[in-house]
Every structure is written in C-alpha cells, then in structure tokens.
Image (cartoon, rainbow, N blue to C red; front, side, top):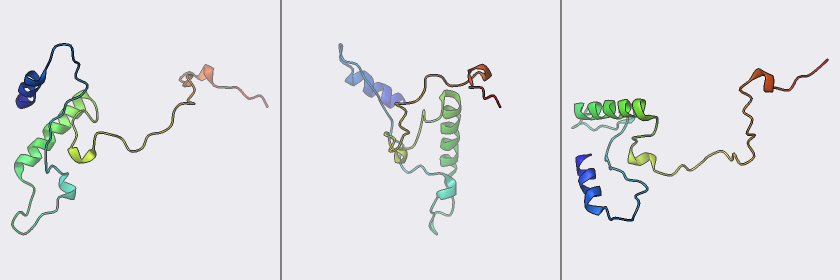
Length: 100
C-alpha cells in the first residue's frame, strides 16, 4: 500500500481526477485449489496470513473491496435491471390483496 501511495503522489496532477487504482498480488489462490508439486507440498504460511488479511479487509469494507487479479475487474454477467420496479415490496401493505 505504501508503494501504491507513493506512486499515486508521483502521478498526481492538479486538475485531473483519478477513477480507480489497484495493487497486483500475483499467485494467490485459495488453498482448496492449490496445485502443489513434490517440492512444495503445502501452501506457504505467508499465503495463509495474506488470505486472512484480505478476508478481514473484505469483512470490514464489503465483499470485493480487495480481490485477486484472477477475478478480473469487470463483471462478465449481470442481471438486466432496467425494468425493475422502484417499489421493492418491503412492506406487507404494499403487496396486492386477492379476495376469494
């Protein structure tokens, strides 16, 4: 993070706005999917610590605040919500009533 902050200070120019920034963390995988070889039988302890830190950041600031580069930055699929009703029926009184 310190390196990213130094880089942002170096790149900053008055009158321009930054939209997004990121820090790349390479070769981070969930230990469930780790493909080891006979020379590296287990995930390194530092990787476990890093994943714990990422999980705590996401718990504090919301899912997806920090993610691996493999997840990408653009969602490939999202629901079309252009016709979604502005009334979210969060109240029982807002639901239609049927008489028998």
